[in-house]
Length: 350
Image 1 (cartoon, rainbow, N blue to C red):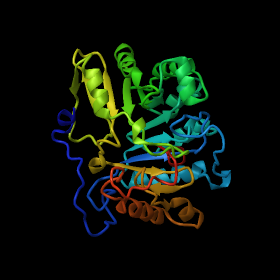
Image 2 (cartoon, one colour):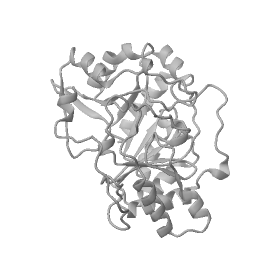
Image 3 (cartoon, one colour):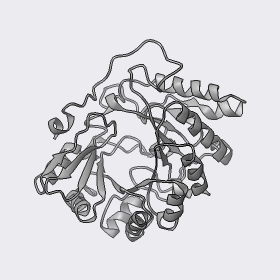
Image 4 (tube, rainbow, N blue to C red):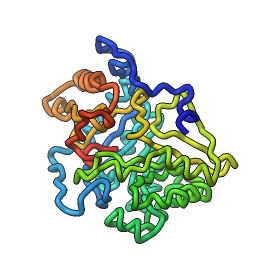
């Protein structure tokens, strides 16, 4: 799998540059251009997935600390002026944010080439048409099991039928191509790899298998629970031969494969075992206004503080540039000195 995917794609650590540019593309000191913004609108969620949040005891941001719609749109506009071309709305669960369609409409009006959203699907069916009308183009829907009882056990809230219905509603509203995100957990749902591959073949939805990352709020992550991407590839390829869809110009995290018989596509996001840091083009805005250049780094630059202190758009642009410029060559998960981030995934935004 590795050689088939990586041919022609350099994801190794690049060489550092010395001086931060104040004009031109939004680059880090290693020359990686950042044109994809992951924009979290809330740290709250209506589920309590075992790999993300505890059933009880989560502390959420006070409302006053969360960015207003006006602040979010302002930062997005500055990012657009710096060359950001695509935005993905995240959370927590973004659809629990009141008047989310209004926000998406304002963001879409800024002229991004792509406006997408990641959701757990619980509230999606009722909002799908309004989201599409507001300017949303695509959705990724999280679904970790195709078995109702197991789905409820992993999610600890919600029902599988609701999420499957939401996928259909999203497609009917034109929010395609629809991607299905599956976090694999050893001994919990990895026996469904073939089921999900067949699901991709039967529905035409792109199923993406995601390695379990050290970003859970409870701090229970360990490598014994991780299912490596290469194992997923081998298990599916043994039943349905796969062909790599390698694109050297594509910085997306997923390694894409089509079924050799032309019936569907899957993706592998192997963040832990096969890091793609060398081609990472993403930056993140947390719900409380911190720019983060990596999921696994605790370095943050607060654009909220800049705005609320009366800063100009030029001040915001410089803050964003400084955040990106400070990005490390890699996330370091596999290095001896790695320390897991203080914030969990729901607090950062995926």
